[in-house]
Image (cartoon, rainbow, N blue to C red; front, side, top):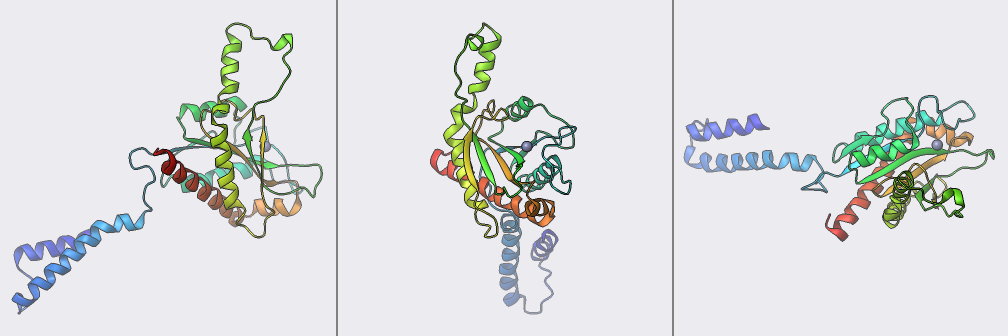
Length: 269
Ligand SMILES: [Zn+2]
């Protein structure tokens, strides 16, 4: 396109259009050239969707559960939770990277401590965190997608829990970090559910609040998605299927897009 535009600009400048009726052809060709130039200008805008964050690129943190010796749950034929989560995170990263900055808490098959995962997201100044897991159950008929957001653990205070100077201040601060984002995390869960529920073949997904060590220290809206019970034979087959994973990635991606768009509309950020 650029080469064609240059050609028309040069030929107009040189008056060298191959036409015997220059008086007629010249204005027409000039309009044609203007059209080509305009198309050249518009082409990139048409090819890419508009940026949601014109001044600031949003940052997405993706947390593939488990890794390394921590394999997570295992399906009836041996599919491992850690592998499914990493594959899905990679697919999501490819989609998100077109618009946002993406941080993976692990990018390969190695172990990352639970608290380290939220710390990585905080360090990256992420705008939201999505932790990916599969469900598992001793009841093999259990299936369906669950989305969790963090709620503070209600625990009775014993003398052992009484704050001690120094260490307990930091610990308490860490444990309460995600509480500030609880309503936004629930909103994120709700909008992702809306897109996951668009799959007519899948059971409707559910949302739960629970104390989650992996999310408690995250200083941004955060959810944990259990993308189906890997222990259910049909679900295991689905999670092993690249097309099904792609569909899952697409639904989560659209959910996040909708969440970020809504935040921009309501908060202007
Ligand atoms: Zn897990």
